[in-house]
Image: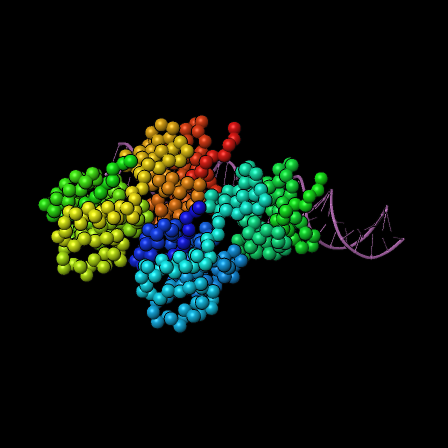
Length: 231
Length: 231
DNA sequence: ATGGCTTCATAAAACTTTCATAAGCGTGTT
DNA sequence: AACACGCTTATGAAAGTTTTATGAAGCCAT
């Protein structure tokens, strides 16, 4: 069982240290970001199990970070606890509206913090970071993929593509959708490019005797899917 | 099992001797520093399992020492018991805020001291100081690393880098993360500098016939990882 | 002076994207 | 059924881009 991975987004260094330190002592793996930009980057790099998100942040505000996380499919269900100073209470309601799972009014005691974190995690147990589909295994921490125990070597884009497909198995996605989710945002790339990456993914995935795990749906797109029985 | 290693930071020589002597009789290995500067130096040299830290110190104050230790990732979780004279009680709360694990009001009896030390150590058992990965062994007490019995000579930065990687094997870290964790705090260093240190680490780690233990993950970073089977 | 850290320039890989072309599929027609 | 057309996908390869590895020089501190 992996340790639960938290992300603390807080710009006040003293408070951040305090929170991080205490949560670490509770046995969590804690990362820290001091502004919204950094937070989003961290989430992109390694998906945490829960985010503690300060309301007031330099640059992108906490609420904006929250909104953006909710927008993206990958992070839409990611538990978020908002932290706000007294006097911003009115906002806390807006925070919940926006999709925060809980909120804490500063100053708060560490025990309160622990309790809330535990409660949220009980409600939404941390997803296993290892994705599986048929004989495919993706280790998202070590950034490794194997099929049948054989280690695959994927390029960054193929990796993201496969990751996205493994997050939604047996679901057909159009090229647009795949571009949107598996490519760096705001890249304007030819739709046909997806085909090429799907091809390389297939080449790497499918050893001679193994069935193709990627299904082409004519005029629609592709899906990661259980292969049909056929001899 | 190694003996538990304590660091006593206390500027009053008489009290320091008393504490050290009694703790040694309890079977602990005890070191002593008489000011903040020396304390930080001692910690840098050999990571203790617990620190007894006097509040009032010449030069860098106890609270400042505590803060600095908490700042650095390597020492962020290091248990600290603050020692303060009566009348500084108000500060003790601040001490806990800052991240001390416990505090003792002088004068205190040796039995009280033993009890607190034991309690803290039970809560945070001293981590094993020897890290292992494949045929790599890092002795954090002796500050030595060997591979296959061959002693490696690493620069300070390479050492910290390897230490961090060995603490989290098979995990990919971005250059940002590596800088954050393996460099002295607040060093603004070019991201690419990590590459150079990784290279030197590889050069030192990998003898001609040995496989590379460091895996490059394009567009992400590096990981300490079991090498692929290949001839 | 030596050792170690950082930076930079450049070489070398690795990866993306695009394009041209072949192959495949479905549908309607004969 | 068989055929052919139009549209969609697969494939191979080249060009372009990004990322990493490397060698070497400068700098700082001991």
